[in-house]
Length: 93
Image (cartoon, rainbow, N blue to C red; front, side, top):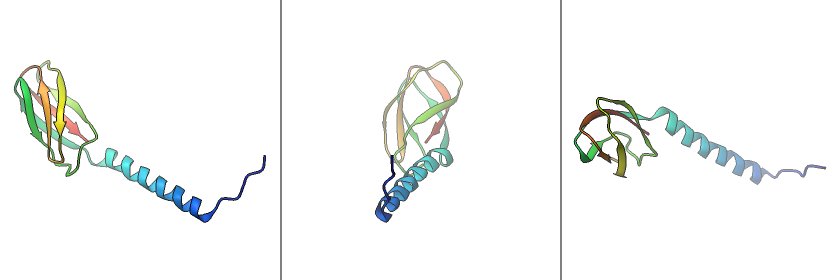
């Protein structure tokens, strides 16, 4: 099977796609914000310093058994619902 020649436009489009994916991966790897928050039972608004809409969050520490659910997030805050009072460490990315 013979390969067809690739145009310069196709190469440029490929480089743009690779560059965009590289930036997305770099954002996930290099810019998490570690936040410590004292939570009450119910909804809790927690500030983060990403300056953009988060892609996710992860509990990295907690002082009590609690289940957390994301209610909403913005470029400045994440709202989590907690099943118990606890202090948690969160990685927001």
